[in-house]
Image 1: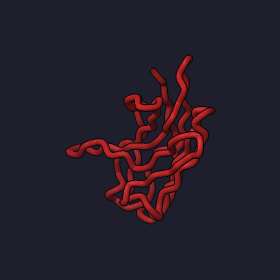
Image 2: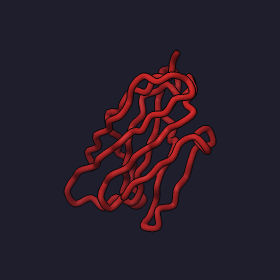
Image 3: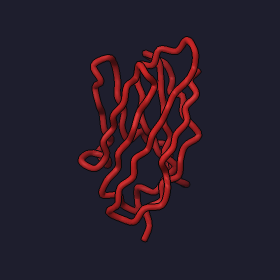
Length: 117
């Protein structure tokens, strides 16, 4: 199992930007994918971005395309999410995740992002 710690959440005005950071730790784990998900009351967790494999294939949820940028190094267990042009509907708890090849996601406890004027 992988332990994950996120940082960088907070309150931002609509149209603003935030960058989230995450570090993973855990012995004997080979990370194949790292990513970010979000959860808001009354909704299910949705993955917004992920980096997969040694070649770093990147995938974005349609709501994140053009506004969010994921970067990181799976081998080092580090991942960032740069968010811009934030909207009130982006308000959620954002969690960092990691998984081994064909394994389940392990998620961190998350960091709150609130977009409000």
